[in-house]
Every structure is written in structure tokens, then in C-alpha cells.
Length: 265
Image 1 (cartoon, one colour):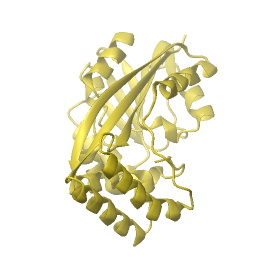
Image 2 (cartoon, rainbow, N blue to C red):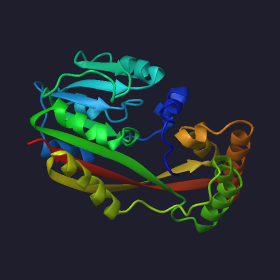
Image 3 (cartoon, one colour):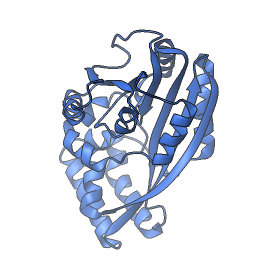
Image 4 (cartoon, one colour):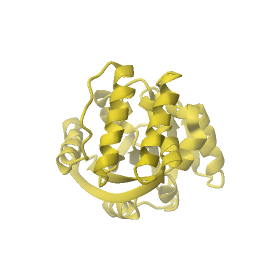
């Protein structure tokens, strides 16, 4: 589904479900990140949009200090409790665009499935300013492709979205497509416009499987789905769950995870 600007608030309303249902990121992604820019106990990092902390532990495990920025108060509280044992971990509640952080101070600035909420012309220059010379910027995200190998279920879900989702938003139905390497490459190049160098990207893949009820909980953490008003949302979720149950009782989600890396000269 296309992202809706201004819906960042939605995630905070389902913090517990977000933590349970949203996936983490592959170990291979972190190996590439840490090979590109090693971290240790003297390092400092900023995580933009920590969410429920799905991308935080691997960075903390290096000994690196992490200052997270999170717009949602419930998510920020959840992460403070989750990582309370790490003395060099802290969370600032607010929007990345608005919070005050020291410039030329961080070895790594990273964001997992969150940087798209920040206007490009604000986010990239601010990331550049906060990093030390030689510091790294890492942007990564998960792109789920529903029912990638279940043609009949995919068709049934398309019909459900055409009946509920698109009319609610006043939009014409769109064909859902899998995230491509070309898109990842284009995203990596954005950093070059703002002074970053040594840009790289990589793709990682996995498949997740959900029952109808589990998938209902998952889509209940999607911003544009949360923002739908009742009773339309409940009928929509009922129809989605029913479609899965009528087509084998499970749905496979084909994830493509992209990683973009860039360095401040």
C-alpha cells in the first residue's frame, strides 16, 4: 500500500501489537552494516524512529551507545523498558526534524522502516550534520509482498481492497508489485545529493507465513489501515481474514529488505 504522510501517530496506538507482529531484520544486513562501519564501546549512534526496537539490539550489542528518536510516547516508553539494562541507551520523544542533537557527534545514524516519514530535504541534511567526518548513514526497510506465490488468494485480497480500502481513500485500485533492485539503487543515490559519498545498497529476502487471524493482527499495525474509520475498518479486516481462511488458511508474505549505506566525507 502507498504510504500516507501524516499518519506517523497511528503506530503509537498499537504499540504492543507492533512489537509482537512487526519483524526484525536479517543478520546478514547487520554484518554488511558493521563491515562498512565497525562499532565498539566508544561509538555513538542515533536511531531515527525506533518503533518497538526491532533494529536496536544488534547495535547495542556492539557496545555502541544509542540515542533513539521516537515520535510515539507509548513506543518510546516500551523501548525504555525493553532496553533498560543498557546504560548507554536513551530515547528522546519527538520528531527527528524537531529534536535538538549535537552536530558532528555521531559515528552512525540509522533508521529502520522509518526514514520515509521525514521529508527528504530535511532528513538527509540533518543526518549529515549530526555525523562525524567518516561517520555512516544507514537506511533500511522491509517491503512485504502479500501472497506472492498464491495467485487465487492474491486475487481475492485485491477484490477486498477494491471494495473497502480504495473507496475509503477515494483512490483507484492499484496493482501491488514486489519491491525491485532498481528502486533500492535509486534510493541509495538520494544520499549523494546531500554530500554523502561511498554509497552502497543490498537486498535481502525472506518468507513469513501467517494464519488468517495472525495476518489480521499484522495489517492492524499498518498506518493506512489503522487510520481507516469504523465500521469500515472492521468489515475490511473481517473480509481479509475470511479471504485467507477460504484459500488454504494461511498467507505467505515475501519480504524484500533493502539496505542503503552512505558516508560523510
